Length: 368
Image 1 (cartoon, helix red, strand yellow):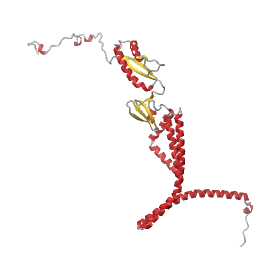
Image 2 (tube, helix red, strand yellow):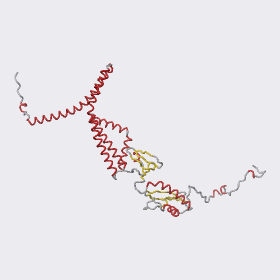
Image 3 (cartoon, one colour):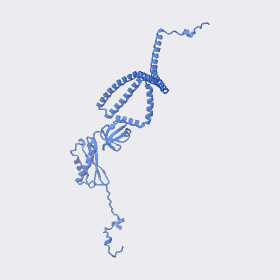
Image 4 (tube, helix red, strand yellow):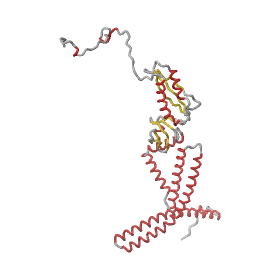
């Protein structure tokens, strides 16, 4: 059979040079090594799982068939092989855990000291940053430890992401409170130890968490408010500006003089160290009511935490001081004056008052 002559294309293609052959060989070697490493890692995990499955299945078959001696032998060999294959990974995982846990504790201590000494970071924001760091650090350490056991971390994270989306839709209220807590800690409408008034409740802020705010009321009760409610309704902070004005309203009768009442009430504030020295107290007329002339004592406190006891104290003092000064504090009443009521001239309403005799006082012959 005649030999085939080379085609013109084969004759035209030049032979690869020696450097090109060396480069191609190195690239092929690197690719094969990388593929072999990936396949070795995957094969190791799969082989371990397959080996455990085969040993369990064989032990179950021996147990059912009643071959107890072979069952215990197979069980011992399977456990021994599992321990031998598991110990190197366990030691590597323990080393990674100890190393990164030590690093985590060092960074946690340093972060806590830095945030605690900072004047721009309050306790609420400090707790938020520390808790966030701890959660992120433990997730990172867990991923590294699981990777030492041959777990596919990428697939695990993908599954957790899908599960996180589903949980997010189910726990929408929790996420809203979480975001509201971050907003409170960043915007700082109130801080820990501030006296606030929210939802018709007055109290001191005890703690700000990512889900709720804890307020200690005047009755020494702890009120837990969701953070979403703390930012969606009216809130009054009595502490944030440092100086607080306390108003004590009272009223006097129309026949009294406001200036006399003002002098009597202002004498009560003399020598009170709780009042701010730069803001003198005032007594002003606020309204002309139906039954009284309404006045208000305005006090400026240097310590806002004393607002409630000061208000209660001066309410009683004003009442006693006006009583001693013979200044009437009227109660709500209504006076009716009838002028030129001609329609009632011949009615019994305009007749003089006559005493009503009893039946026993009537004459004996009087008709019933």
